[in-house]
Each structure stands twice: as structure tokens, then as C-alpha cells.
Image 1 (cartoon, rainbow, N blue to C red):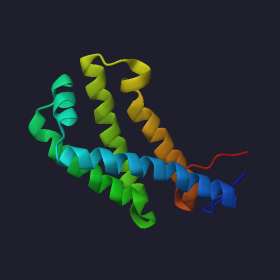
Image 2: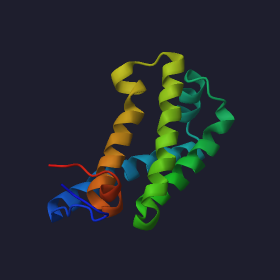
Image 3: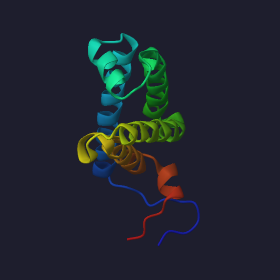
Image 4: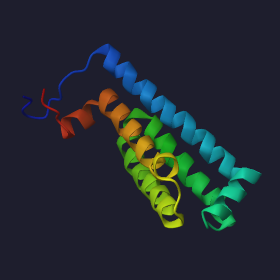
Amino acid sequence: MQTGTHPAPVSAGAFWTGWIMSGLVILFLLFDGAIKLIPLDIVVETSRQLEIPTGLARTLGIISLISTLLYAFPRTAVLGAILLTGYFGGAIWTHLRVGSPGFTHLLFGAYLGLLMWGGLYLRDARVRALIPIAR
């Protein structure tokens, strides 16, 4: 069991698995944020279906991109993860409010959040120190 503030070291494989997990989240969110800046027809139509004012697409894209860039850099990754957790919570609430299907739409933000925090846990000793998982 770990004591003090020194996190358990992870293997090189676990470290790179964390970066791959984080990379998948980063790539998806960069794409998602970018298409909201344009905004494409699919963004406008999805906004209407989710009862989100279509004028908010760019704002959501900017929030997503800034938070994702913060998450991508090790020095600010924890701040980015916290901001993205709030963003995902908003997405979950939006889907819940309009009655979206559970496992595919409603919980997608939770899936991204688990992948994001899991990747950060494996690649960042600070997070492992905050959340010690005993073997």
C-alpha cells in the first residue's frame, strides 16, 4: 500500500497505453470542436434535435477546443480534464433532457470521461498520487 505523496510507478507499457487512451479522446474532441466552428449542416441539425440554439455551436466548439488543448499538454492536463468533465456532464444532461438512447448517446460523455481520466491516470503521476489504487 502506498503512503505519503509518492505514487506507484507504472510500467512503460501502462504509460504509453495512457497516452494512446488520451490521444483517442484528444483526436475525437479536436475533430468535434473543429466541426462546430464551421458549423457543418450536421452540427446545425444535431443542435436542433437536441434543442440547443444553433448559434451556440461555435461557442461550444471553442470551449471544447480550449479544454482539449489544456488536457493535451502534461502541465495543464488535470485542469483540462476537470473542464472536460463538466463539458461531458452538460452533454449527458442535454441527451437526458431530450430522451436520447441510453447506451449510445446518453452515456457517450461518460465513456469519453472514463477513457480520458483512465488515460490521465496511467500517464500522470500527480493523478495517481491523488487517487491511489491499492493492489
